[in-house]
Length: 448
Image 1: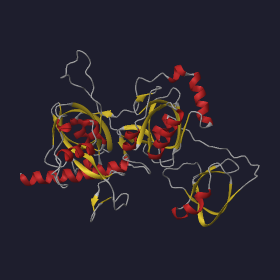
Image 2: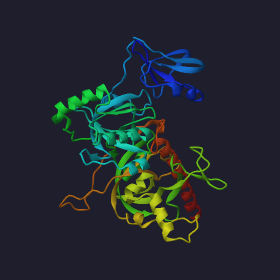
Image 3: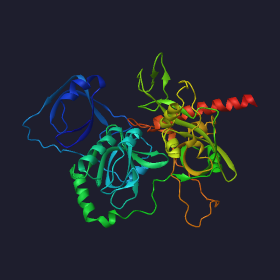
Image 4: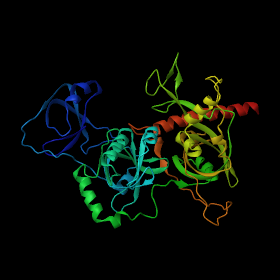
């Protein structure tokens, strides 16, 4: 919680899980209370949401009472805004979580217009919404709204009957996601738009008076991952000072590995690998003993560019970027067309994947800890960019010259309260990839 006292000081509040039902059901945001018998403790250094380095914690002796008739004026809200430079300096440090406000340029990479409709099925599947936001005349930033924040944005979008112009999100985390610098909502983030609160109303007034400045977009979007060739990626992995990093790599798909499963069965909620119980599927991540399993991509392909070859592994949504279909759709279609096949049967690589052989695509690649530790040379693909339509008169065999600058993430940091949608699941996917590739390489060694 954020608590504001009579002097306007904002401090972080905490109710232990075992006492939530006792206190939280009586609390209304914006109401005034007196709290007796609490204790203070030092804040953790990660994900702070207030300036003081202490937290007020409720104990078993705490007494919370409504304070009525008070003449003390408490501010309704208190925000801590940051701009691009401050967020970039704090990227991946897991430090204080500040608030961000700006005007919306894109929603899920679609421009704002009166006819824009949110694809709620896709949002529910991805557990996120991507909003490109710009503060005044600053650079465009990627803002990811996860889970509840995405749901709140959808509700506000529908309530307005049109796309909102201004967005304010509290407690955002600056980090690298899918190779690009971005802001990411947390479980405690709140979302406001247009006329919701005073800062959004003030920003909306500025926007209406400065439409020319607001509509001017910088030619260089700062959220793009660095580019690299296959040779440069392999060379980077050998460097002693190399760290976890993302790159964009353009390569041609040579083949799809077909002697191993191209998908895995995951928990529908967390996308972590499901395990078989006595009679049902279980998920170690969410702790449920009965889950509905769903197929997710874990597909190994071979690619080449110039004179270099590499193995890429399409993980999660990257497979859908390439084929245009969910893994679960392809698996279900196969079983519908082959009714006599048993549940334990491995579905062959679908034509939607085979059809991509020969295509030149741009992949967002994550150099993982498993690559740097030498456990596997296979590189994980977190995103496949859409096919580019060649410009008139341009030959298809022109070479693309790229340079390498690493974008690093110390230790593969993860954040609390996110989906795969977040790095927690990406890291778990990395482990699955490493295990699968290690197994394949061991088999090839035995054959040789």
